[in-house]
Image (cartoon, rainbow, N blue to C red; front, side, top):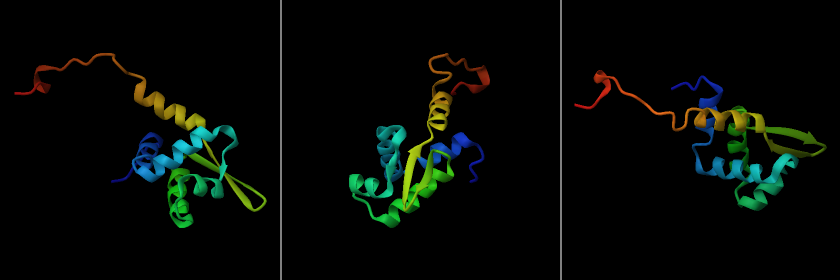
Length: 105
């Protein structure tokens, strides 16, 4: 299956426990972000595992990386986060009506 839209890529990326933990940590870190070493220290995961999962989050547009000398700072792209949450909640509690053809037999 190909994930075509930015929203579906973001949701697919967050559909793994490790990536969700990384993302939530970066959300808590705020605009300053965290270095790769800081993420490893907080979550106690192997560097190769972190690199793999961060790559997925970056590819989905959820996380940005900025090189500062020898350090890579990882930050949440808050605009993408807000767009994703907005997509999920934009029609919350609006009600749904089913036509006769859609009702269960």
